[in-house]
Length: 113
Image (cartoon, rainbow, N blue to C red; front, side, top):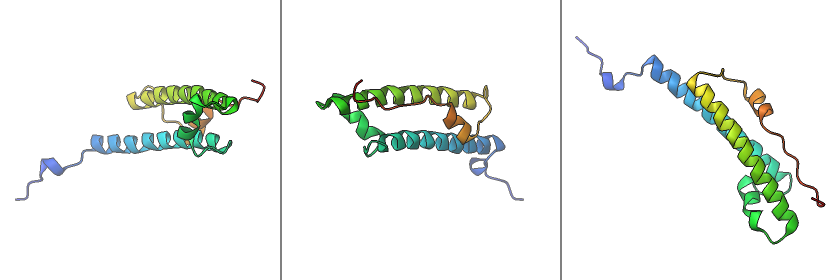
C-alpha cells in the first residue's frame, strides 16, 4: 500500500501562507515602483539615487532629497504597518490600487523653499 511522504505534502495552510506572501510582496514591489516613479519625475534614476543627494552641496538637489527621504519614510512606515495588519488578519486585503491611494501624498519642494 502506498504511503504519502509527509515531508513533501503541502497543506492548505501552507498554500494560503505562500499565496499571502506572494501577494504582500507584490504590494511591496508596487510601493517601491511608486517611489521610483516619483524620483524619475525629477530625472533621478530611482528613489535610491535621489536619497543619495541628501548630502549634496547643490541646495536644490539637497532640498529635493530631504523632502523625498521624509516622504519615503512616511510611505514605508504606513505601508509596512498596514501590511502587518493584513498578515495578522486585522485588516482585509485591499486592492493594490486602493492601497496605493492610501499612501501619503508628495510634492516636490519649490526652489524658494
